Image (tube, rainbow, N blue to C red; front, side, top):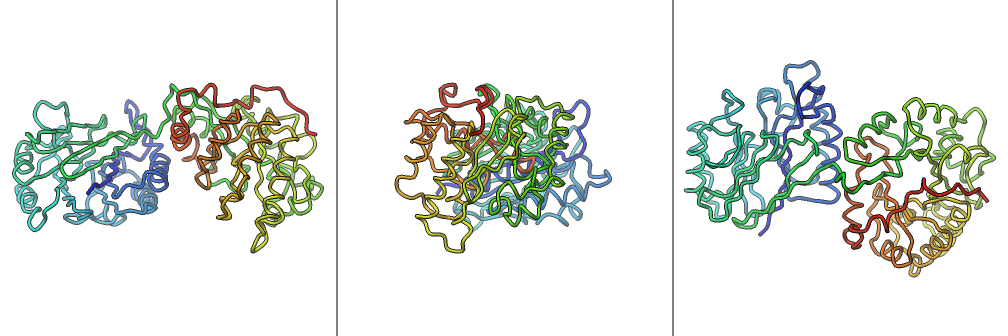
Length: 497
């Protein structure tokens, strides 16, 4: 039986330290991004978080930071074991906020045995005689593979690892004698993958790279019997792909969680993007929060907007203060329930491009929508947007995905034909739900190009285009991105009709 293991380590949360490769200032953002990717798409059987969650356990606010990290870890929907590192507080403080892993965890026939090894000079450690004995006894009554889990790596002789267990040879003897398949650690920021196929030195010896060290990686490990496979999972995008995130929101969005324009731009660079664009909801800039919540904008149309609620000027000023180039500014627009475009006069001339989006139609807000009426209203709204000069149709089928409704037969072809006829791109968007691969296959067969958008409402989502790239791989399109992807900033501005 195969067990899929995710290994994260060395967040070093706290202010960035001069001369350090680690970005502890991004720790919470990185952890949120990793947890979301694990929970939504990678879905391991167990997650191991192997220490150095904070940079300085004695710093003011270190406990509060630890508590926030614990809350993020708590969003995982699988078994989790968290161990202390040499930078973390003492056990009584650390496990006040995080659940203690105990001595071991049994999962799918594998026994994970946990150790809190005393630190020694030179960022090394030593396994105590008591824990060596516990390690040897851990297999009693257990027939499956054993995995030793700790913060400081165990590494065989000849394997480069400057920060290791000082009595590693003794540990490896126990591993060999007692049938350990794997030793897993953190601590060594570059990471370690030493897999011994012949078991001559025990099993495999792994250390997760520091999550806080670019390109912000963790390990995905597959253990089947004593066979070990391991690959790194970077949170940053491959810079060689030159990807742009064309759908990022600002603090002016009513659905913003913690968006900050300057920080979003910095994160785009940190995460390996070629660029990003800010595309704010046009209706959020001219209707009040209360009106928007009550869907006044869609029920009554653009005429219900009041001058005192207009925030377009402050939004553009905030973008200018952050140094955002005009070409990286767009608007996300939709239609009201009567089919009229929700876009205040004068807005269009001040942005580079429009994303069209069908968020709701009259039928979709009913308690039990009629699928036929819903489909026809959706198509009417889509056609209006495409004729109005939008460059991209954002999250094209989200209306159905959010309602938990299957796309009616023939809908994909109808939407794609309208996109093709109007020269509009389809956005790949995973923000609320995973889109249907079949729709994008239909797009590519028809020659409709794609854009990638995170639809970020939280800073941890900025530039999270990993699922988009995986979808492109499934489509067989990852090797010819120049032919598949579309830059909405490049074409001429078309007037709203």
